[in-house]
Length: 154
Image 1: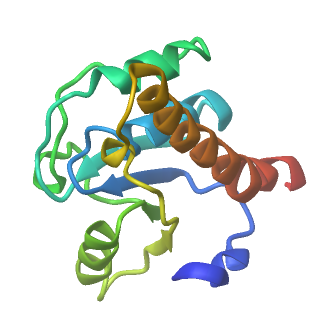
Image 2 (image 1 turned 180 degrees about the vertical axis):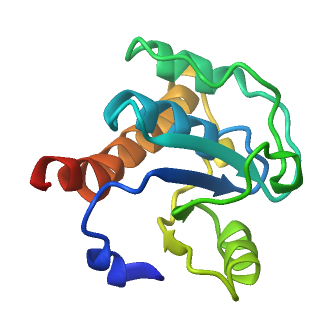
């Protein structure tokens, strides 16, 4: 599924993959948020199209909520331990295109949640942190409205 058709999901998927470009900011942030918000039995992972480096601003904005980012290095799709997911949530255009390629012949739902890249922010440290907080809050809102509500209605 792509975009607005997301209403077709009627329950929290058993396994969710969050994908972005480098698995260093948006997807690990979404993974940490989803782990804190979704049922404990839900398998949640994240990966990137390319390999990136951990971003200290991610840890800073997650720690404000009492969360931590995944305790591993950013990983690519090829490095995932498990490669079957009920739902793939893509957060960047290149990740979305890659997910659609990978799932062309499988029954995996793909949702695209366009999410800004906070690394383009400039200014003071506080202004840059503000951009990362905006992404964190954007992802938290999407997880809550599109996934957590499904658990409440089942």
